[in-house]
Image (cartoon, rainbow, N blue to C red):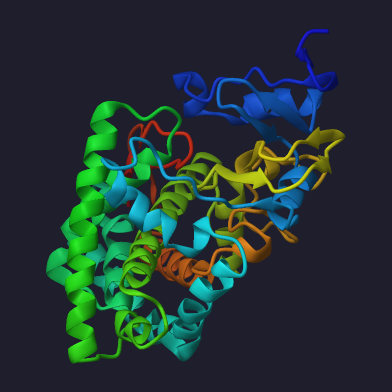
Amino acid sequence: MEGKIRTSFGPARPTATIDLTDPTVVANPYPYFSQERARHPVAWHEASGMWLTFDHASASAVQRDRRLGRLWVDKEPASYLEPFNLLHRNQMMENEPPAHTRLRRPVAAAFSRGHVERLRPRVRALAASMLDEVDPQGFDVVGEYAEPLPVLVIAELLGVPKSMVSSLRSWSQSIVRMYEPAPGEAVVDAAVSAAQEFAEYVRALAADRRRTPRLDLISDLTETELTDDEVVASVVLLLNAGHEASVNVFGNGLVAMLGAGQIPAPEVLLTIEEMLRFDPALQLFERTAIEPVELGGIRIETGEKIAALLGAANRDPAVFEYADRFVADRDPNPHLAFGAGVHFCLGAPLARMELVESVTALFDRFPRIGLAGKPLPRGTFVLRGHRSVPVAG
């Protein structure tokens, strides 16, 4: 009965042995995902106290089944962690309909006003100016290009001054480290401080936009029915998700593409989709059972948590031919990197646009670009990425 346990409420259930904190797993989780998938599509993970999915069908079902909700519970100690809790309690990603619908609708309406396409020429100009500054003989494509570009873009979309970009990046990095398994005391302290400073800054900026509206997303949000706390939470979510996804997908995907000796396909969007599939920035998305659910041959009881492992889903050989190969022109490509269902990533059009423009600009400028050293990973599981990727043109 290896890999199974007996429970008090029924027969044996499959259990996963993968250690999500093991540096070897964090460095390359995909072989471990494959081993687990061969044994079971869904399994109980004792260390995290939740079920994990390992195949595409189960991960998709987790995100689409309305009986599995995104239910926020304040982190403890709640009084100390209130700045962090405040940002999450009031954001769309941590709520289910009807609250989710009420929080998402104004942001979706603001996006639909053409803000993304309005930024495309600006993205091209920023990409060109950044590439003008790099040394073709060798540069860090993440630190000097992929990282600053999406921060500048999302800041411009929101209406945040360019002078604040460094602070935005620092705050964001501190907050998202809280999503990793078992964050340490220093990580918690940094996240609380960052959440407090970030919220205070956005609150002041929103107050200014109410007095003097501009052509930006913060101004749009202040004219909706959202409360002050909800505007702040929405802006922080958009910035964190908006640039973390872009920079990490860019870095992960470029390393995979160059490592495979490939270049972007003539239809660059196909390559962007493969970058999203092959090594996604977000690996784990958690839900809670609102009522008992049968999924992947197991029963999830009310109150139990289940996490869709998006990276595992995107390497499922039942869905993707040569799933462990990077194929620059893969089509079709039904990856789950942006999620599915009501929580499908609202910023997906912006991320796709940024990635198409930044990848196109890089290879237009440096068609023979290659890795010039060993990439330095961030060393995190839930949000995968690289601190630096040395390249030469």
